[in-house]
Image (cartoon, rainbow, N blue to C red; front, side, top):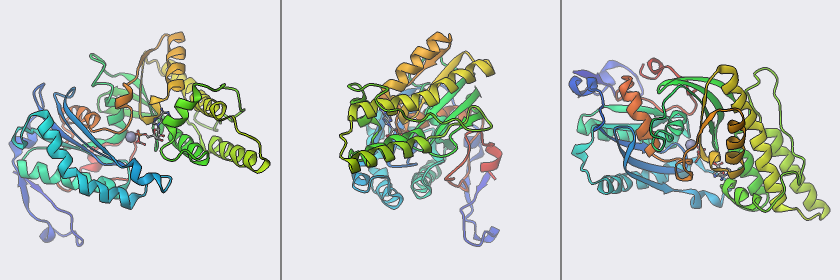
Length: 375
Ligand code: KG4
Ligand code: ZN
């Protein structure tokens, strides 16, 4: 039997509750029939899914809070945590019901433990611990960025590492060398804002509310890509690092100056120019990384990967460079728990399970060492 510790303030052995989990459960490895209950609560979506064998989604439920945060123009962490608490139990019941299984059919519980809003992460993490403990099944910690990449395994049968991964979301923009399902190497990332932040701040300044990426995407179809000359930042040092804060500031200044001078903004043109500026910052780097590091596949994920301009530029430039491109369907680009269930299968296969001492991390690189989090 392995001992499971609960965290306490004093951190002494006497303070730890001696909760036990059966070693035979901990040592078990998954197979194609293994059923994982997956929980995601890193930002403003509570999501619960039931995934079998890493790729068969039996159910996937999402309770989005975006309407709640809209009036503040962005995610309010305290509200996010409270909403996760309110819905996670009910959403789990719905996920189990829609999957046609009972709690006793669950073979493992997976949860996003990093990165994200710490209070929001802790809600899902503690809820997952409770279920894993009560059912005496393994607890699998899943990194949110790895899971975004794994959304591709759900739809592209036969897709396997190695490949270059590109994740563009509201909180992250990074390029990764994925050598195996749990072997990641960060090769470039944004030095400041994420691509999604540039979209969200631009949309907010234009009065479209939060989140703004999909609104600007739709508007861009009627605009010209060179309506406005927006910057494409280059950063010193690593050629695969990116920066979006200059773009964000340029867009906001342009909107304010136009308003002050009474100049009408060509909104579709600005939306199209923003989409192309983001795409020009990301796509050539992703293609160059595939070439330089000798990978023949590019696997894209994250909320911003829903962007139609980015997708068509990715398609065009990877075709030209003879690189195989994998993108998830729009429904799997944003946060969901099916992707957590998929990555969990591979983490479990690698023996990356956790005990009840598992903590949440607001920041943690995708190439973290499992030994570090299991200490
Ligand atoms: O992956 P995600 O759902 O959450 C994070 O992990 O951050 O990404 C959310 C981000 C938001 O910034 C949102 O504006 C952006 O993805 N987004 C888009 C589109 N759909 C969502 N950005 C550009 N074009 C879209 N179609
Ligand atoms: Zn995400």
